[in-house]
Length: 443
Image 1 (cartoon, one colour):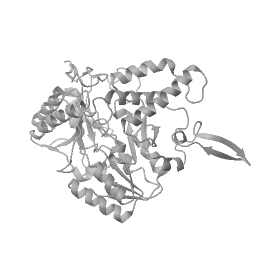
Image 2 (cartoon, one colour):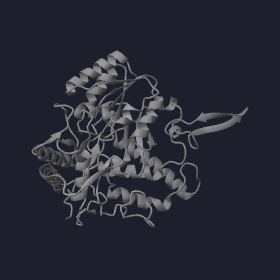
Image 3 (cartoon, helix red, strand yellow):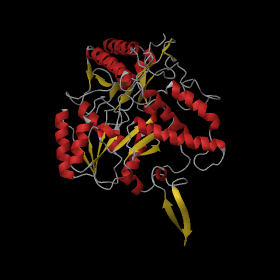
Image 4 (cartoon, one colour):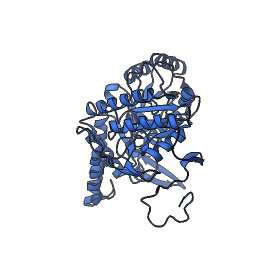
């Protein structure tokens, strides 16, 4: 079946991909795992293909292709900055992903950090070498804002790091209000926009936030790049995130020791050969999303997410996970429990028997899952630009069948994961050479 997609939305690669089922049939893949990694936009893949013939060194080459690539990198930096509403004096540093971006910021913060307990591990764990205080979120957004006020007053942090949208429930927090509260207490604000930026407009200047981090692989540009965008002073004063060529103005050796003069950001934190293809891919995604991120994208995803939540609520024994009952908005991320079946078994059966890709586990947010499920694993369905009403309906019907009749295949746990036994599908269709002798191979 061909996916029916909105003509207003950019096309993604693989929207009509067919995958095998354990019963021998092939079906169109329903990718409901965009919150983990989204497929590339077709415009992104096309642009990368255009750049490849020119690929060369950046910043330090005199050749024509090197000059072209240097221009491409710096143009990509400006494009990404515009897309996220960077101020004229903000700096855009290319990183590997959001985790890397937050780790870079952690080396630059000159004082204590405050976070909520509902954060992704990338935000919870980055501050291991910095005084770090975790505030328990309330059952409501209003209660959570009160808890933040108390935490800011008690701990006097230099930085408040907060998620833009939960990677578990999709719920958002009122960022403008949070920024106002933090700034009134003398703290800067960093926004983890990994889950927010693919779904909603993120405008750093309009929010008044100080820093923003995001990942290309969640923004339809899975070529290994992310960004940290924000105020320059802390980043210029911080030790180099990745020391090496390109990050220095000069290096001398005196009495057996190196004497280094570092460049300012962004070069200070981009040592080594930069990920040019990742940067241009991320910029291409920003250009493609720019005309639709305020209108077509949220309209498409709100409709599908509402359809999904309404469908799952009607399935007996299914419980949706939510942090608050007064969240101002929810992006298209829906986590749920099936009371009678392990989450991993549900996810494995959805894939093997229905061709539906979801996520199971605790989603790198263990403290939040401790609150929502008592520490049990859950299932997460997340929609992106390639999601359709057919995908949603297939998931709801499949979950209802699993609840009513159980899996239609046999499954076992291997290395902590549920897998079909046997699994007649070719799980390595792109392998080069022989599969013989590979560990875990059924055939």
